[in-house]
Length: 297
Image (tube, rainbow, N blue to C red; front, top):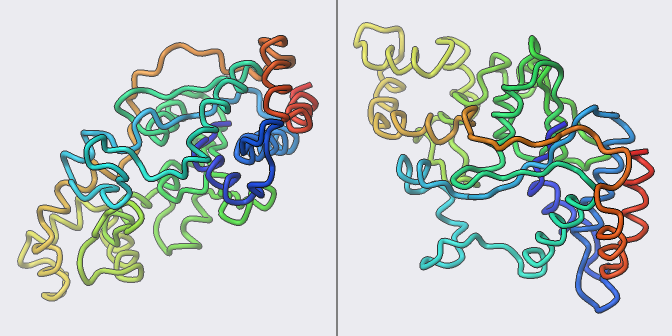
């Protein structure tokens, strides 16, 4: 099981009341919410291995170089390039990592890459079923029935997650099960600063991808004046030539991230009991920590 950790702690932060605080009054709603999510997922799914994947770089340079608009609207500080995150949440992220370490739950982020890329690399390496837990549709591109890679999509809540496999992608978008990345490139995604091809929405993008199979074949058809593309659609694709050349490298989740060695086996007891006890007392998170410990045991 691979956790898109930021997706989960953002959901926890906005879903759990901010009145949930530590003894000193510091908000710990994201910490407690994330731990409760992990306890629920481990109890329901009983994974053999678990990794909390982290964003060491939320806006990697290689993606910005290809497409400067990538996540540009989320920049809080032009000087530092910092992301817009509520300060009350930002302060809880180091606590989350400390608690995961004390529990013995593997967590990893790699400089220059997003959590999506860490997830993509770990999924590619693993021989056997993989559950990716996320509220981000970008990771739908990883579904692979042959390799048992599926998404536990948490848009409606962790407890009400939807299992996304190739059939679910086809049903939801009308495209081949592994074609989500090409589909997303065509239609765009304002939340990530991807403009898409002007005039090509969900329906047209789905029709084109289904008809031509993939983006490379579609672009080849656009370059061929004798292709079966309509003149209108062909013109739209040709006008978006530069975008279509750059965007696939932005949208595609990487599978070649240099991830350090990590022990991703499910711990049965805390790795650092004393540290966990201190953190539990300091932040007042005993009920959530106990739920995780019970789930692990």
